[in-house]
Image (cartoon, rainbow, N blue to C red; front, side, top):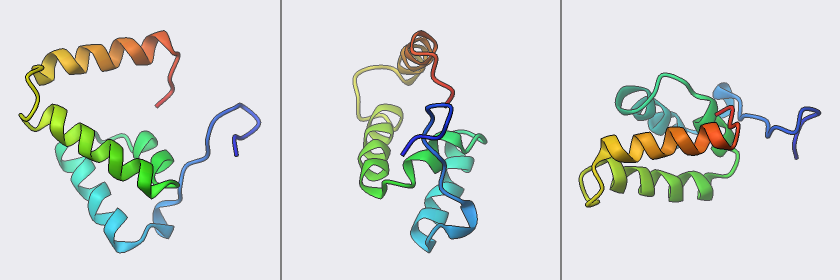
Length: 85
C-alpha cells in the first residue's frame, strides 16, 4: 500500500531477518550506500530475490552489456520516470 505521497513504504532495518540483513550488508559493500531501493523491495522478498539475480547478472560480468552502459541506462530510466529510489 502506497503512502499519502504515492510511494511504497520501506521495510524497517531492525525488522529484517538474518538473510535480508546479510543481503543489505552486501548491497552497501558492492553497490550503493543508499538503502531506499533495497528496503522498499525488502517488503516483497520474492521481488528482491528476482531483482538481485538480475543485478548480479548485469553487473557481475554475465551479460554482454558493459556494466557502465547498463548504469547509464538505469540512471536515464530513473530520471525519465522521476524515480525517487
